[in-house]
Figure 1 (cartoon, helix red, strand yellow):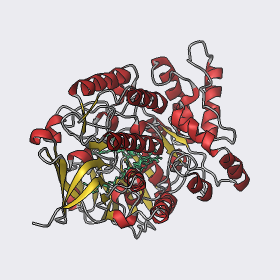
Figure 2 (cartoon, rainbow, N blue to C red):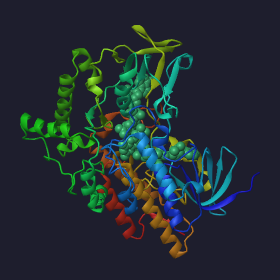
Figure 3 (tube, protein in one colour):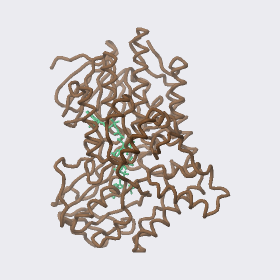
Figure 4 (cartoon, rainbow, N blue to C red):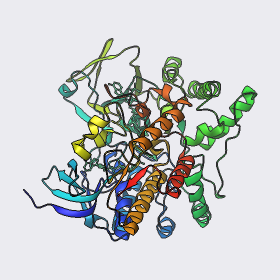
Length: 541
Ligand code: FAD
Ligand code: NAP
């Protein structure tokens, strides 16, 4: 057996969460080892290289805030950064702070077992490395385990087959090819317009239509950026505390992004449409912030959905295609709203066809294409943009065992249970960054990642100062938090969405609304109050 190396921290994952955790650990003088299964940093932005991949939070907001010099010197070129630009940014950060020295790439953590006797985590990897860590930090990502659909005959396809979230680094040539895309979530909605530009023929296989709003992407103007950066600190404060959960809708003047109306009650159709028309033209995911109660009031929600339906019918020329593209099975926003560039107009192209799988389901994939109940679609290439085993997938892919050998998979058999999305009772000295039960995927993730890492750092600093060796959360605190997360979710329309937020996209996965829906500002207040009350709900020894 290889000799176990010892570290203060083992960090799993080298996306933005793992990188920032490593930076802070080094700053504290702690020893740290990061394991990353990819061959470079960047996480999401390393793996998801499909055409059209870009951020849906504005670049000046979707970036680290921890170093004012970094944010002043890095130059974003577009309102929404492309995947290559974000990956270059991640690589720049790794170089700037010499992070790669501490990261073992091409190394997947297979198991992590807590050894009570020595109060250490024993970590093993698929390359045979073994290490002992005082603290185990899971920076494994909320959307890092691709969902490969269980479609009959998929492996029999003899053409080229790609998964959006495992895109080949060398790129893919679509010219003149007959391409099929399965899925119409955020990834597909970004990829479809770009693929359509060069594909000979593109067939989109849609099971559930999604709501999509225009990004209104544009190059950033140097003068505008200079003016914005003068107030960067103040902007960041709003992103961390604000109602917009850090998404953006950026203007030079830092300010809270307030809705135009508190409710749709009493608003005429003209007044209501004027609010959303302004947001539609402005572009971006903050569209739904037009009226404050869109995600809690069914009437407001229905009216907002109706506005988008009208837009789809205005844009898409073929009436049947427009009707099929209109989402009618979930309230708007209860599945992640998509942000696109030319998605709906793409269906006006002669080389693009929509197959409505609800009327004409896939029977199986064949060596030459897709067999529908009614007809066969001949394909040279099949692109699966079918999503992820979100939020719990990457954690449960590792054999994690806490006190008394309890497996995380057993603890979470009925769905994830955490305190603040950060710790689980029975798993001492183990933290999850943006774990289930925190705002995570409902926020600009950079904001949530930094907040969690800062919380962990404060906790470790407290332990250093007090000579404490072990921290865990109590079962009581965890139960209370899980109840609260459910209560907040149940006061919204989110549970009606049937989305991956609920685990609904994975057959057999427990249906639990996983993110905390009260927003980053409210969540930050809770965390600060916890710390102010001597880390209420945490037990130190
Ligand atoms: P990740 O970036 O997912 O990194 C986790 C890393 O852990 C991965 O590199 C993975 O390989 C590694 N890993 C996992 N398990 C193991 C293991 N067992 N052993 C070793 N390594 C492991 N968020 C936004 O806020 N705005 C956006 O616009 C946005 N766009 C997105 C677009 C796409 C296509 C996707 C998929 C997600 C998007 N997200 C967006 C969410 C995005 O995941 C986060 O913004 C952020 O990048 C997450 O960083 P992370 O470090 O927490 O996780
Ligand atoms: P997704 O939203 O889960 O979409 C998956 C799509 O695949 C859905 O349309 C789904 O249809 C379809 N699908 C799955 N299995 C299928 C099957 N067997 N047959 C037919 N269709 C099937 O996944 P995603 O698009 O990768 O996005 C996931 C999340 O990543 C987003 O919500 C967002 O948070 C993030 N993301 C963000 C951006 C961005 O704009 N920056 C871009 C990409 C991803 P059903 O709905 O019917 O299941």
